[in-house]
Length: 251
Length: 270
Image (cartoon, rainbow over all chains, first blue to last red; front, side):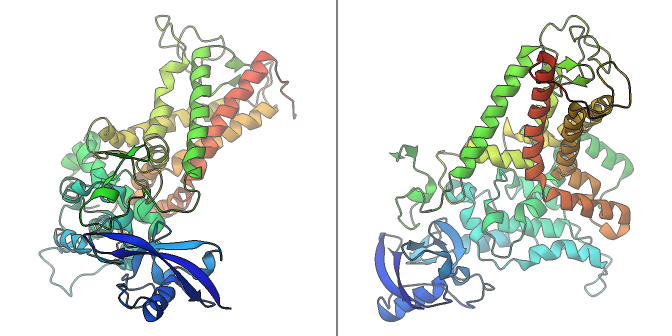
């Protein structure tokens, strides 16, 4: 069944911009990205939008729909009423390039700041052996599609640009957790998380978990476990003493 | 710079970002959740503060209110001190004030409650993608919020309180004459209270970490791994247990007070 939907799309660039209204045809089974593409095809060919897989797996079409960070390709039109005006804006935590396209290079810079997996010196790649239950735990974090919705919604940088220097953000806390939980990783990820990547700035309000399209339990399974591991090495004198006496690093 | 009665956050003012003046563009009722949180927590704070300072109606054979157990001062009503009265007579305030710091600390530093009150009271942020009203933000990196890292100590203390409140629930199998083998409605109230407090404590993130979360090699610790999987299942329901146990402890206290004052009669089951 075809209907006409009311859309309000942010148009502009880094210098200026505004929300512009459009009435556009919507068909049964469509998602927001389909409608944005129809807008491009029929009314405003210069509308800039980044997209790729249309299947929720590439993380390209991240935007804010009715004020909530979401993937446009995974937001079904039948979740809105006929009367509703659907507002689509670019991610508000990152610099805008044009229309719905933002510059997310902040995240790539942060990725570079985390040292890669470092296996034991006595093993060469190919000689690593792990039990399945040890692998499973961090598999959840490998589902990340790097849509950066969690980074966009995190108020630590969304509302405070000045924190971007010190704060890596939830996407990279799951990376640190994945490495710290890896049985063969040898680097100290706990102190690095707290001292170099700003884990202490997270106040666990769980917005990252709420917006994750892969349903990764970012807060419960990565950030809070990392906070507890940081307590082990920095704020728990009993644990610290125990580790010195019994030398039980890397249980 | 102020807009809509709040300081404008970086979301609206940072150069280079899309120029959108609105604090948020959400169309759903995002404010309902923080409003409920404020209503419940403020109600609990008012009730528990009043009860802690009331210093009366906390014991009626065989029940001790959870707000006053263990009752550790000489001023405690006769029969209410399961663990003796080590604080002696020098403690002249309500005996409740000796112990309330521990459950209060456990809940204040709880990962779930932190989320709830940071959002609802401190509005940091009030809801996802709704700009917070603060000019600067340092999270839990400085005093006093760095003390949130003491959560595990309050967790350990909380376990001791759970044991004591479970003991109180077992004592509630006496009747008002002190004879064993009876059950009243109050017995069920104290049992439910102790059960929900255990569920809240055992589902805690610190418990999950202590039991097995801190391990790098699950495969080398099969028993701890199994326990960790069970605690992880409970942990999924932690917010639910946090609210039920909070309301439960207030209701248990209210029940003991009501029986103590004669407001209600404690019905005997057997």
